[in-house]
Image (cartoon, rainbow, N blue to C red; front, side, top):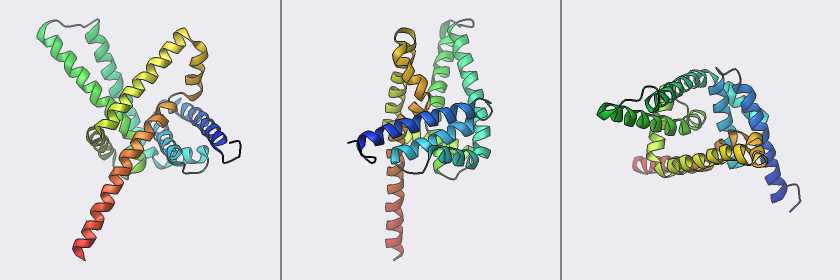
Length: 221
């Protein structure tokens, strides 16, 4: 169990990799405008970690950061702006600008619907961007269809992220000792947990593409 390649040491090394990933993600997100490339790089590393692939976390992170910078930068800024607008709408509609009657109800339903679309698309956006060669618009479109087409994985990710988020808030308020876990691993904890489900969806898509290619080759033959 305590061999270098044993389960205990391997598990501890994975935890260490997640801590390093958190530090890298946090430092590269601090300028705010680089939040997109940082998120893309962190998701790339998360997918590699759950597959037991790649080399060191630092080299993988900065490789993905540079490779996806041009596309991830505008996507990150657009995502931040869209999130701020949706958040402001929810705040205003539930408080200062609360509207009564059918109009207020319809506005709230529409805003909640857009929030759901925004959230599930964002779950898949960065994994799609770092896995497939595509444009910015193509990444957004593919992320939405991946979220809708893999509703089982999407639902599980939303649920587990909500649970982890609630645990983080509750631990900060009532159990500071447990809050240390979230302080150490940060948002990349969510990325790695989600990566297990995203990996399965990508594997199914890859297998479907392989089967389709084999059928085409058989037909041509």
